[in-house]
Image (cartoon, rainbow, N blue to C red; front, side, top):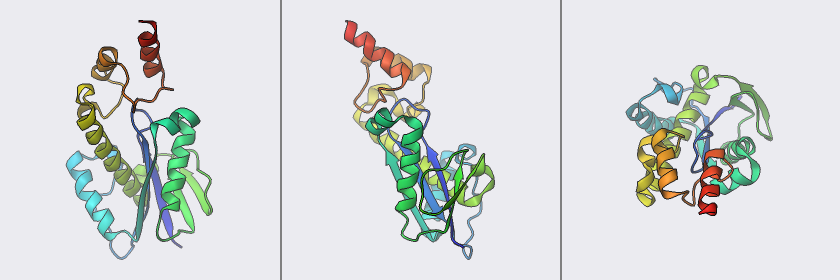
Length: 191
């Protein structure tokens, strides 16, 4: 039975898309070092990203952008990104293992596994691809909007990010439905 692992990256940040990845590993070409992407260094993730893309039977990365997050809410946008990632696989699995406690609507059997990114290799691989794709987007956004420091905090709500929001307002990629961004926009409107 072909099984894919699915995970997301970027639910908590105030800016940019939420990314999801789906991976079907090749049992004949195991990849050592797979783990929850948050437990790996950036260098380890980038090395594993190459191995996953080379050796997996299939992989797919998808996202829901900031406008979709604002329109749907972050949970529904995450489910949409996961659904897109699974649908993007060149080989369709019979089963999907999803990190977390909810499953997106899929055409195959799906099972949610809390902390699956630390225990299920397919989900760990998806976690790594989603995280490296999201980090790449943050580097691109940093190139467009260097004043926010996206290369440092990756869009998460850090003191430096809050200070940049206060100073520069929101950029087009900020999630307007997130409270800290909405507060800044209200301040801007009252000036």
